[in-house]
Each structure stands twice: as structure tokens, then as C-alpha cells.
Image (cartoon, rainbow, N blue to C red):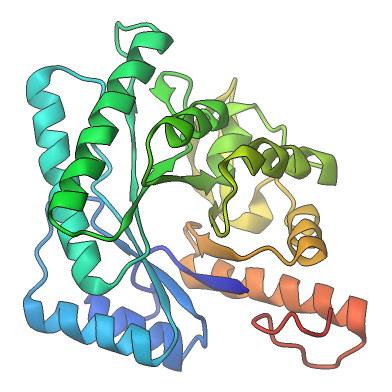
Length: 289
């Protein structure tokens, strides 16, 4: 199954609530996923809106994910860790009410600590969060995002290691961040295949993948740019997904939010058409392959 959607309320949606956004995703864009963004800090959502979003998503087969506030650090000092846990727990409760599948978090920073000590602290604190999720009957998985700067914990290998050690966590695979961190290493089919090969020990049945163009230098992301302006191609990724019929959710994090979500859809449907000869294929239907 392929799912595609924007990271947040579509820019062309006149209403600026998540309720408006999910309706727009379905009725205007005809996409089947959305990642709700709580990125600027603790953002409230009243029960009525949350319940509407959950019901609408269930009735219209829209897969929901939630991104916790950007600034969390599970490797910091005690006060910083406690604040981060509170943000993540609040986001987890809301994600659970929405019926979301994964809560995406930024794991933390090395600071003055070694990579090994940072890893230990993040594993310890991620275990505590997952335990508290379990106590509160929060069914959402904790998504550890790959990060795009050298000073930030979150290389693909580090994220995989955390997910191996902490049951209830999964990787949130941000390809733009991986591409920036390895200074533009995702260019060929083999480059993308290496990512899925590394993920094999986790035995994932579903992949949450963020896609955007990215401006970078010396292994560090500067900022997101439209997919067409970046130097990371989509075609090799799409070929791998179609060849393996992977169960993936592709979230556009491009500045051209829904435009690039639709661009991803167009590229997938063109690839299916090229393989099958079907004139107007639907990205949701891989039975033709």
C-alpha cells in the first residue's frame, strides 16, 4: 500500500485548522495520509476537533501521523529531559485520541557528551516514554526521526540502534535529512537500497518516509527546498517501492507542501503506467504490478 500526504495543513487550504486540513487532503487533493504538526510547542486541540479528525480519517481511509514539537532533547540535563518528556507525552495523548499511527520526535543533541553516552541516555529516556505510553494505554508508536546535522543525534545507524533496543519505537525515515547528513549520497538506486537493507533487522511492515529537497553543505542541512530544486532524485526510490510493493507512507515536507505531495503522486502513477500500460493508474492500487 502506498500512502501520500502533506506534513501539516495544505498551504492552499483557506481554513487553517487541522480539521480544515484533513477535509482538504481528502476532498480536494484526494490523498490518503496527513502528518499533523505540533512543531512549534504545546498546541491545544479541543475534544470536538480531535474527535472529528479521528472519525473523518477512519471513514475516509486517511492514515494519520503526528509530529511532536521540534525542540526535544532526550540527552540533555535533567530539566531539559523532563520538559522534553512532557512535550512528547502530551503529543502522544493527542496522537492517540486522533487515532494516529506514529508520533515523530527529534531525539536530541550530543552537546558535550560522547556519541556513546548520548545513545545511552536517549535509549534510557525513550524506554521510559514508551513505558508511560503503555501505562496510559497510548497505542501510538514512537517514531525516532533521522536528522540532518552532524551535531544532532540521529544518523540512520543511530536511529536503527535505538529502535533495536527500545520496543515500541520505529524509525521516521527523513530522506532529505539522510541525504544532507551524508553530503548528497542518495543519487542512485543502490544508494536507496542500502537504506532498506540497513532497516531489514527491524523487520518493519510499514515505512514512514519524509521527502523534501534540501540545501546542505559539508554534511549539514541548511533548510528544505522544493523537490525539483534539490539534487535527490525520486525515481530510484519509487522503483524500489514498486518492485518490492513496500507498505509506505510518503509525507511531503517540502516548502511546496501539497504541490510536492501531488508531484510525488504523479511520479508514482507515471511509473506504474510505464510498467503496466494502464492509462490512468491509481497510486493506491498496486494489484496491476
